[in-house]
Image (cartoon, rainbow, N blue to C red; front, side, top):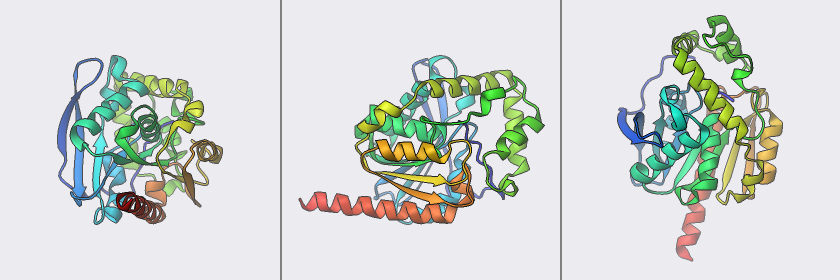
Amino acid sequence: MTAMPMSTAPAQAVGRPATVVLHGDEGVPVPCRVVDVGDVNAAPVVFLHGLVGLNDHWEELVRLIQHRSRCVLFQVPLLDLTGEDCSIRGVTELTAKFLREHVRDPAVLVGNSFGGHVAAKIAIDHPTLASGLVLAGASGVIEKTIVADVQIRPSREWLSRKIGELFFDQRNMNPADVDRAFVELSQRGHARAMVRLSRTARRNHLGKDLANIRVPTLLVWGRQDIVTPPEACETFAAKIPDARVVWLENCGHVPMIEGVEKFGAALTAFLDELDRRRGRAGVA
């Protein structure tokens, strides 16, 4: 249930990052990296990354929609979390606090892998904060977790193999990002945090709660995703009342990298649909 999306070229920032400090259940400061770009008068779209993911991994997708949306990239230092904050519930509550205090308007939540799990939980537990959902390879139903045979100090070879599983075409994997993950997970506390986050998420199966998601939902899924396989997408689609699916061929677990153009087209169409719905509601 990881998402360590890789990029094929050095990221070019879409906006200047700021730091927002939140306090979760542990009461300790959690400095989160936030980029807020696009049309400030438009409805917000908030992007949530997976384990060992970065805001950078959304940037190519954001470039495709920032002309018509307010895009907020929210990066939590997941591997630095401790205690109750270091859990699927803790990250969900930190994210909900950020949405409530800093985004303020109901947002379309776009999440990959662990971030998709968080987005779905917010739609279930804090429904007033979400105006729509976009789930891409989301965990919470079926996933093959990276921590199945995790080492407390994983080797670079192990990480390269595991990260490679996220891609249909492993040429899309950037060795520099493998190096970054190796440095991060060489720290004992970080490796333990990843294991804890993964295990708490696996215990938090969303199946029985998905029917409580009342916002329109777009599922963008790689047909060749072996981490959250196609049957996971089919489960989300069957249980969420207002869901539609866009399949991406020749794409694995990170569609914002391997299928960004088609993802962007699907997201734009979905946001246009939500705008039309809001317009009709306004007329009514």
